[in-house]
Image (tube, rainbow, N blue to C red; front, side):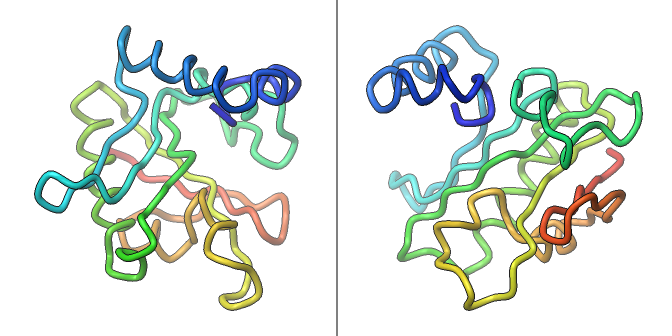
Length: 155
């Protein structure tokens, strides 16, 4: 919900309120993302939707639109700690490409964090790292901040 709500609303309904809001989206559709499983155990998450579903992107100077083309956005990954650094993020992103294409997207964007490895705990890389996007066939199309490239893949 971090990307979908104005900051004040996100903070105001922190915790239970945001969980309820996400459950409403899941129930009413379209799906707000995709899950990765090992057997029946969910181990990863990738949030994606049309860019206009993400209010925070509309208000960001760093992540403002590159052009006027309609895009879908990948905004968030979560990988269970025991499964990190095993290629789950890349697999999820490749599945996100297929999901977006199936739902009519022509362009998929991501907004990874480009900090040097080891300087920050993994938890700060929830938007992904540039290498994940490069490994899934994305290219950098803009960078308005040293640490926040905009990566894009034409579908």
